[in-house]
Length: 396
Ligand code: AMP
Image (tube, rainbow, N blue to C red; front, side, top):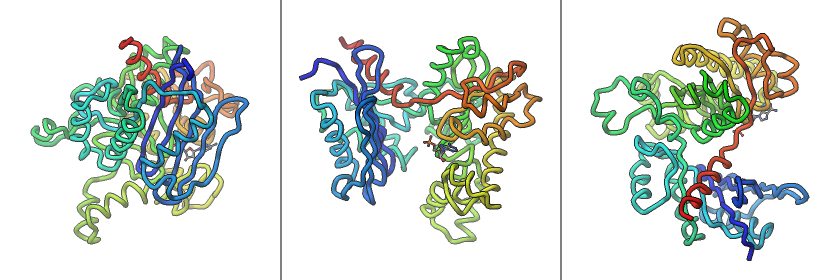
């Protein structure tokens, strides 16, 4: 049996399970990362194990990932084959909702689990899957320390004015608040800025997490002041299949005039809208950039337009701007989107260097630009592994 302590990280989505294995003998170092998609439908596995080892990419049988429990068993079998002697002493979980009170990772005790179950109605599409992943991991690793890391926690520093909706006060007390999400990603970026650009970290920074899910966060001194997502991960920017900000009156119209049920409206807003809905083609930015159809271009135009609007709004909330940081699959890879977001933004102090942008450099603004523009690859799994290690260390 190996003596190297390892941590397993799990990120259970509605039909996917992302997993990572980290050596935590020192600063967490990744040993393996992988993902099972289309759980319960036509499941597929992808995993990579670092230099010198072949990655795995194959279709699974329905039984290998019929639900989150069997998907976890399959993921563990793959990890065991690659690292037969590794035994997780901690399991870190991404949990979408930590409610108003959890502003940092928590060890999963029965009391914390009860509170997280109570929060399920706030994130009915994600939280139950996160909790199913935790239950499966507790069964698989009864002796391991189980740690939850919340997407909402990073934003608990929001000032009250940015935490409320203009609803009667009783609903705030019941938890109807602007929580904000993608917190693990923002936490990672904040830490990276502190390491690679400490002066920028101290200043006014807007981070654009642009992936299949997309949001932006305004930070001062590395702490969240405002974000584009609110009560749910539906608000703010348009996403792969989600609407982003929409007049709530549209919901009344859909129900009263289109005869839709609330579940149908939810399905429409979460799964059929955004880039997919506008383009009629795909939720995938690469496919839209390649397509060149009128509809695909309009979808891209809308995506860029909303990012630019939020950029202005967040800069106002911060009282100015020292840096814009791109991350997420689109932010880290799409030169086109970054260029279009920054186009004509000199008034806010942004001046993009096209060559640096074309090379995907870390700093992609010109030397004369008042505010810096950066590309910083995010790493949510590492944030979870660090939290798991910290708890293990403090427990001796
Ligand atoms: P994520 O959810 O962070 O994995 O990001 C997924 C999104 O990133 C999808 O819309 C992809 O099409 C997009 N993406 C990944 N690579 C590129 C690229 N080279 N150019 C444009 N979009 C990309």
